[in-house]
Length: 158
Ligand code: ADP
Image 1 (cartoon, helix red, strand yellow):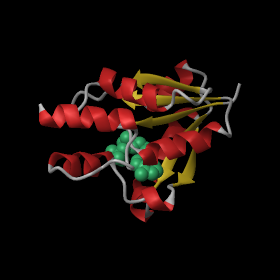
Image 2 (cartoon, rainbow, N blue to C red):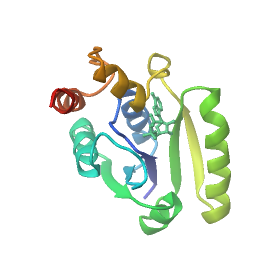
Image 3 (cartoon, rainbow, N blue to C red):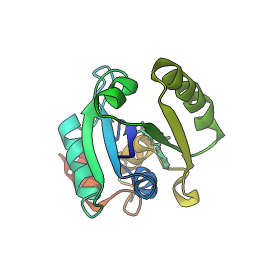
């Protein structure tokens, strides 16, 4: 089975992430969306909430699983028989770091990384910007899935 992972923090998932996941799902038998649960980072949503929001957003796609990971993504790849890591690239600024990571992951475990260009209309989009705009009452509908919009409103109004 050809299986790839789309790793990230997804705090929360955006339509930019979703676009990459959907497009990647056409090339593989199965995509695992792996939510990094690094303790040291300041997050708006708990890992379980991030997983739920992704599950709701990908419910209509047949070959996507959602899971969490801690530590090295290559260890997750080994444990789940994943052959490739899929990453979205928004701009040249993403590329520098992503290329370094890709080389490191290949040298650590022989796992290759495939890069997909972000959809132009989502290339400015990041989870952190969505949170910032939503915090100040900006309209982020159209940038995140419905389930995320609902939870952002709940979280930020409470
Ligand atoms: P962020 O970079 O927004 O904090 P993540 O760490 O969850 O988000 O990102 C996981 C992956 O998704 C990274 O490879 C990142 O480049 C990619 N990604 C993030 N936002 C977008 C977008 N708008 N379009 C395409 N890919 C994206």
